[in-house]
Length: 177
Image 1 (cartoon, rainbow, N blue to C red):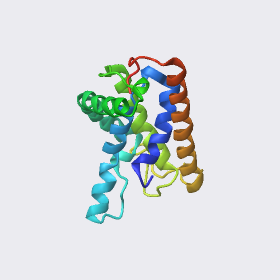
Image 2: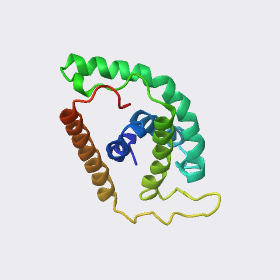
Image 3: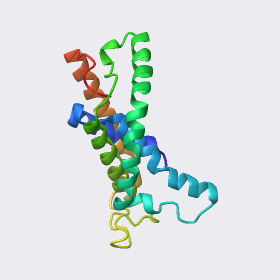
Image 4: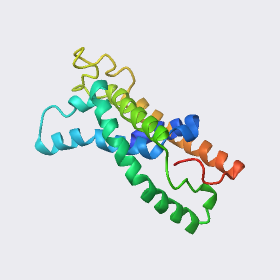
């Protein structure tokens, strides 16, 4: 996708489905890391923007890199988010001060692998099954507008359900991000 934030829609939906077993922060960190390759290639003016990181095999080392980075960043991000939520009288949306390894692993792996899947629908320079197979069988299976709308709808619905569940349950800060 042209912008990493569009990937966060399916991530928010995954958060609702998987709850405390999924780190949305890990998902987000993995989105940023995996899109560094195309960003660098754009700056350099390369013809091919999506190389090894945008394969299912290449997504795994990116997830492995995102895991300790997420673990390190999470407490700072949680403090920042919780401060802002409290300042706006939304303390009932506060998140846990630390995330465990299992949700971080899930968030980072789902993040990179779903990123490759979603980008496969729109980038002709991708070979998601490389080095085992060339080409991209998913290209244009879904229209670009449908893909973008689907990601935005997933995000909006996921956020609405998450906020509703938090409001109804008025949960304490036990559910990481």
